Length: 94
Image (cartoon, rainbow, N blue to C red):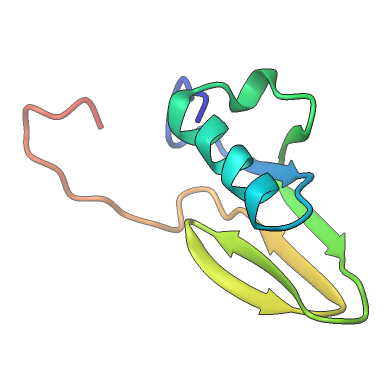
């Protein structure tokens, strides 16, 4: 997954994958794991503050923060900068 300059930059990274079936999905997953996802012609990456995705009428499987979800209709995601407080050791860059 492409690195970000800062975790608190206020941008939501959205990855749209083109995958038809298990083998194709596995190939996209390998692109994520090997760092090639940002060069893949079957992956579209968008940075945004709010994202609304209209899904098919039948349920579609997707992931938010690596957690699988299943839904039909519309999915709306919005980033809320500063909404999450993170405690880290003093030696951390965060």
